[in-house]
Image (cartoon, rainbow, N blue to C red; front, side):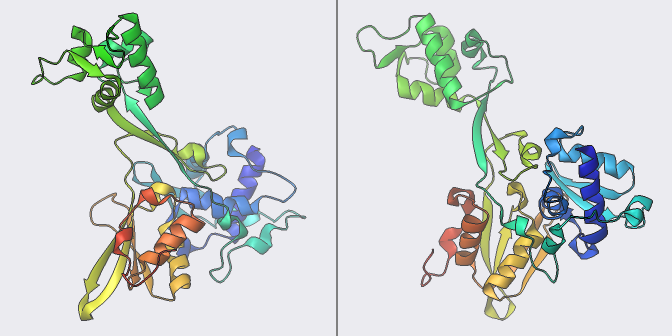
Length: 329
């Protein structure tokens, strides 16, 4: 698998990646440039190589001076330079029987593999805090451990059962012993002695640190995006601004969070609405990129994100800015 992966890299560097494509998200590099170079009678799977992750492979290739990878911000890496003068690239010849060349990007046309998108999976997690540790450690959890909502409910329920805290006269209520009271109640609520089960769970979630895990559904790059991150995931944001001459423009940010290449997105929206579109860096180091397109294009952005990129609307902020006379599909 290592040999096949290296072959696909050399093929892509020699025949597919253009200087104008750079900088290029590593996830897009894999999906749009590496995968199409795999011979049709073979299957490329990074996880079956000795590198296990595409990022590890790119680190190794950077040490071989084949390309340069730069981290724009945490979790977002770009290929910023390639070396076609490298001896291995210059000596590379496309193997006979490799018929994927017809999928090569030519004249701005996307490869066949670009159409393969599946809905991302965003999982919610809770991290054990000092305040909740006395309750949750009875179930074997340590401070800093990540738990699902179901695991939190079960651990709290087990504690209540273990300490026999269910109210004997009203099973809908839980008696708060000193440990449970300190864990879920505020100091301004010293007189509270009972809580309903649903309020107990809600307060338990509140006292834990929220986190999320984003799993992208594209082959070979899912493992690159499975890092646990604190806080709620920030949605893609759409804004409408009025420029000189009273002209409207649509701004789209945070595409990289969901593995969407801003340049690829800009190209698609430009073709879809026949309007000028551009990509620029956001102010501040490591803040990512934004796509600017002429006119109020919220309706088309909605369609592109939900239908092509399979992104649920709950991860898109600003859809209410669509033209009042337009109909959202």
